[in-house]
Image (cartoon, rainbow, N blue to C red; front, side, top):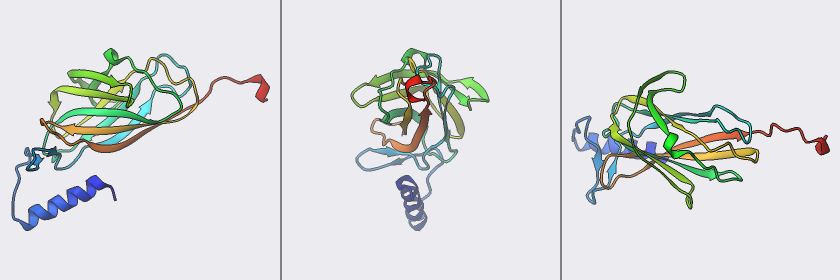
Length: 188
C-alpha cells in the first residue's frame, strides 16, 4: 500500500472519529505549517513521442489528475531522473502545460518558473496561477535530444500543493525505454 494512500485513509478515519468536517477547498495543514493535499493527485500516464535514441524533436508528456477533493490547488510539479545511464538535458523555455491529455489538449496553462537542478537531475515546473482541483493536466517537457544510450530511464514525479511550506507527494515514475535505431555491423 502506498504511503500517500495510507496517510489519506488515516486522515479520513481521524476526521470521521473526531467528527470534524473540512471544507473541500481546505488542505491539511500541520501545526508546523506544513501543507498536504487531502487527496493527492495521481500520475495518469507518462509517454514520449519518440523512443529512439538521439532524436532531437521528442516531447515527454506527464499527465496528472488533480482530484476534486484534493483540498488544495497544485502549485508545482518536479520531475527527477532517478535511473538512466545519461543525464537528460531539457529545453526549459519550451516547456508547456495544458488542461487535458496528450491526445485531447484543451486550455493552455500559464507557467511560472521552470528550473533545472543538474546536481539532483530535477526539473521543477511552477504553475501561475496554481491548478485548481478537479482537473486533468499534462506537462509537455522537451529534451534537447533523447539520450544517446539505449535503456530504461525512470523519471520520478512529485506534486506540491500551494503553501509556503508544502509537502511534496510522490506520484510515481514515468518509465521511458529508449532503443538504438542503429544496426551495428560488428554485432551481426
